[in-house]
Amino acid sequence: MLADTPPAHDASALSSKKNVKARKTSRTTAVMHELADVPAKAPVAAAPAPACSTQTAFALNSNYNIKGWNIPTPNFADSITQDRGCYRSILAKYGFGFVLTETGVFQDNLINHFSPSSNLQQYIGQRPTALQLQTGYLLYDLSRYGVPDGQLQVGGIASQTTWIGAVPNQLAVQQLSYYQTLFNKRVELNIGYIPFAYQFVGTFIGGNVYNVLGPAATLPVLLGASSGSDGTPSIIAKFNITNRLYDKAAVIRSDPSTSVANNVGYNALQVAHYSNPSGIIFSQAPSVFGVRFPQERALFVNEIGYKNAAAPGDPFTWLRVTGFYNTTQYENLQFTNKQTTNGGVLAYADRQIFQTEPGNPLTAYRGIYVGAQASWVSPQANFITQDYGARIYTLGLFGRPKDQLSFIWEQEIYSRFITDTLDSSFLATSGNLAARHVTNQYTLSYNINVVPGVFVGLGAAYVDHPTVAFSPNALQFGSAAAPPSPIVGPVSQLNVNHALNFLASLFVNL
Image (tube, rainbow, N blue to C red; front, side, top):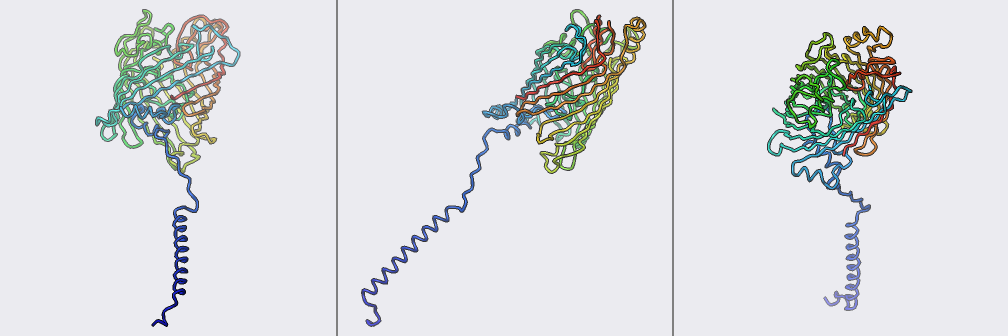
């Protein structure tokens, strides 16, 4: 047995070798463990999204932006302030939303022409014409109290202009209303003091509120509807028959009626402003500097439409027909010292004919669109009685997702009761007066998104006959470029055969 036992020094040596091996193994294992904790290529850590960002601003739109419009409202994510400093999120915490916009428009006729004094200006651009509008909305979310999509809406407007025939100089309440949905969003109800322009017809190009150089919105104003610069007492109900087909109806207090017979220097927008400067008088016969106008009565509006947003393989389509019947008394242009009610039908259509990026729901709207319109209103009650138009425009081309290029043709036909009266007048028979029966306007413009919340439009508009009456000593009867302002007065050497207006616009969404 002893022979089988290794010598003492041999056992010591063996133990020493085992310890060295063990230490090497231990060090190797430790290094392997350290290497295992370090990946072959360390990933770059993603920066955390800001607590208040463009994404949070966009998310706030659903409950805290304006509800009830027939076009997309100014988007919080497309604003200058977005959600900086978390101010929109803080407002939303207490149930409030806030929208503030600035709109500016400038037009000037570049063709050599007679330029009258400011009080005898007949159309936008005859003299360098500028206007600006500031609108502010404060919204309160009622859905927190269980009211489906409920919202209280308070809006104000300030407007300034170099020509009051375009828009009044005013500071007024624009909106004071209540909104909610019923029957799982099948019905939308809006009641209160509401501007008409954002509820019916849809005259903005492709529903783009950022582009203000669109078709003229003259006929709804002539029919008694309020413009975007004022609101009137309204009850509006929209019935969503399907996800695309709808019927929208309203009973509205008409704006004042004006005509050649009873109007000396004021159009409907001016009379509405001067007789109700605060914008909150619900019922009162309009009176301007002692001239009284018929009491405003009910305006009934009904619009049947088909509308779908652009989706992959499903282009944008919007078809709508809007009927008007106004029970307010208007001066009858056919029969002297008679009165008549007012009414008309407006048909508009817009269709996306080409999608440049149809594979993504967020980019399916980008592409080329076409549109058309045809409208008829009562020739006994209105200065302009027919309106036709066509347009082609783009959205999101040239690698610029919010820019818009457009070309618009629009034709307006004057009431034969006005033109026949002018043609048979003494001035006409003596060769000093002639009446236009039709005017055409061609507008080319480009609206560019400069930075988030700022849109600048540039363009040109050619008008072949910007006024109805023309003569070296013409009677001034307004223009198709704005709601007519029939001022009777002498004008010397008036050249109104055509106009080429330079156009510039600015829209700022704060």
